[in-house]
Length: 220
Image (cartoon, rainbow, N blue to C red; front, top):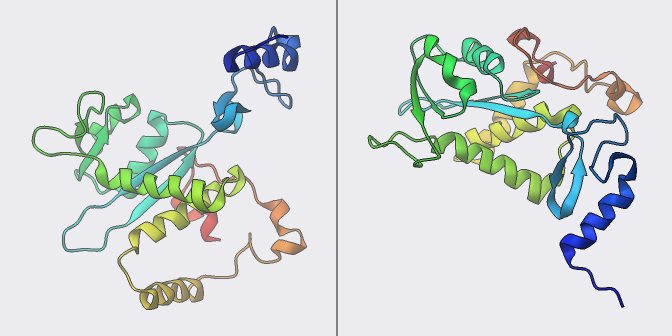
């Protein structure tokens, strides 16, 4: 009789599954040596991981919009490009302590919240509004879609952002907003003929610092 605990059993599984790499997980498709673990000890290739950058307005007397971008990772250039394209100069911008936002001080009046110390500053500054969007995105992933395709992740996030922005609007207003948007757009290059092979032409919707707002692909 041979008894194994859960950790010991998984270590033995690693040694069998990835014997060519000394029991260290790697991607069988691309050979990447840095996969990441997700729920139930499943592994995914870190090359397929994407980061969602999001900016939310906070105006007391005006509609508030949520802008999203899917980027390869949370880096200073991506953050700079998002703020450059969507935030008016010298606006008040609140960010957490991540180093990617350090250079934004040149574009906006920057406030920081160090979440390793507190959820808000002494004067009440917090990032709760943007956190509520990410909470909705996570609930959408876990409870509705169960997975987000990297290929369509930018579209998923745009949809979640719209739902977050219109959560207090009635269904009649939401329907009118959808119809107004659809009727003011030209035929979609990506979705027209989707079942006839158009989906094969869609590239992964990943932004970089050179992507232009007018070429935002989920609007085409």
